[in-house]
Amino acid sequence: MSLALTEQAEVAEAEAAHHSARQRMVWRRRLLPAAGIAATLGLWAFLIVVLEVPSFIAPSPIAVANTLVAKWNILFTNLVPTAIQAIVGFLIGNAAAIVIATVFVHRKTTEEAFFPVVVLINTIPVVAKAPILVLLLGNGMEPKIAIAALICFFPTLVNMVRGLESVNPQAMELMRVLSASEREIFFKLRLRNSLPYLFSALKIAASTAVIGSIVGEWIGSTVGIGALIIQSTYNFDSAMLYATVIVGSAFSVLFFAVIVAIERLVVRWQPPSPV
Amino acid sequence: MSAAVECRGVTVRFVTDRRTVTALRDVAMAVEEGGFLSLLGPSGCGKSTLLRVVADLVAPSAGDVSVFGMSPAAAREARMLGFVFQDAALLPWRTSLQNVELPLEVGGRRALPSGAPTPRELLKLVGLEGWENSFPHELSGGMRQRVSIARALLGGPRLLLMDEPFGALDEITRDRLNEELRRLWQETGTTILFVTHSVYEAIYLGEQVLVLAANPGRNAALVNVDLPRTRDLAMRETPKFISIVSHLRDALGRTH
Image (cartoon, rainbow over all chains, first blue to last red; front, top):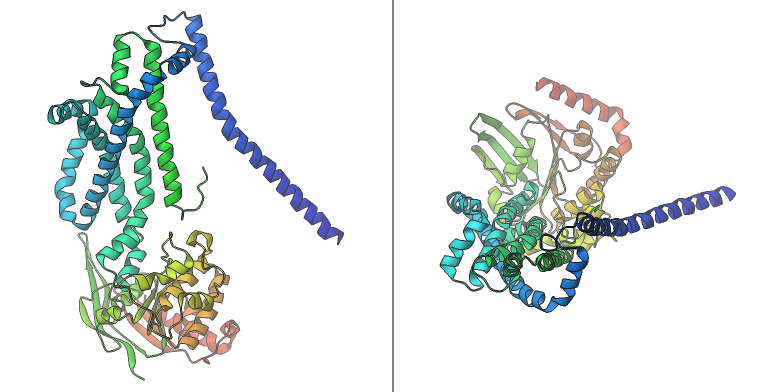
């Protein structure tokens, strides 16, 4: 009896130790990034003061924080068009990539004929695509949406084709034994199989779509985060420039987080990842 | 009894850029209805290919194949075949129960024949009651293979094709599944074609063992397993079993 009791106590002790170790890990994960960010901000403020950097070259973090609060209205008004273009571009670019990947997988000829074209278009740098699209689509939101869409398109296409094709060969044979149609194979097997691949592309696309939208605004635009960046640079308003960049990045992070949340809802069958 | 599967002069060639492989040459095979035939041979002897010819997954370059008097394609269309793969080939986003139900959803949404066991009953039959809502990654290798056997049994196929289904499992699990497969075979009366490279498994399970030789795959020997219908694992130590083992080892040895 005492032996069983001893073992019970040992197990309880081991569990308690494991639990507190876990708890420490959780806090480490929360505190270390926060400490890292705080240290970077501190170093930044320190260098600005010690090196006597003039405020039109680089602002102190306090000046940036003040601007964020004081100019919040202007910043937010300019974020709205940038965000709309990024989201619409994201939706169009990825939807097109998914549709074209589906066609490529089912009609190999189209892939062989058009994949080189896609690669060629992808090699054009964004800054070169922007003026071309402004000429084609005018000065409104359209060219910015087009740039955001184009920038999302390629990674999603490549990942989606891989996801649709890399099905377990035995699962494919199973479908054939069951006399499944191409359509059934697509919906029951390929599409589900591609979801993890799709989401890794969407996570990249969430941040690049915002970049595309901003770069589009550099050329002949009066509103948006991109326009604000150009304006504050010309005005030597470094605090405003930094505040604008921070607002743009914050939106990117938020967009990314939304995609991650959707991924968790949709791709639930994978074993809990170690990260 | 009538023949469930009959193959005559089956030859399969795979042509690639580098060389042409003759996987099977002039192979003959027959299984009577309700029989249990083990296909035994070294790797590369084409035993999996022969199974795939019967399942209409590989088209033979020459020869005749009939499954219950039909072409393999017609038998497949009529859902007379169940196939169990080496890796359970479960869809990872489906639970055990949903995996077993898959055959009802594809191939034109077929209803379960009346009187046939339901997916839940089949999971119970393979000993997985209570695991219906688990995902494949939550199951052990042996349990995954049980799910895939339940899936293959859905709709009461007349022929079960098994491609080294226990090859990746540990010996203890393998022994247990061998016992259960024998029991399943006796309970369901399904004809079984079982590919393996284990001499013991081939004898323990089969009523007959067809030995194939490699390079190219061809018939080497057909051995009747003269053991009682109801078998247990201890039977593997009996003199009769051991004499069949040595007989098969001879046949395998001659194939090199």
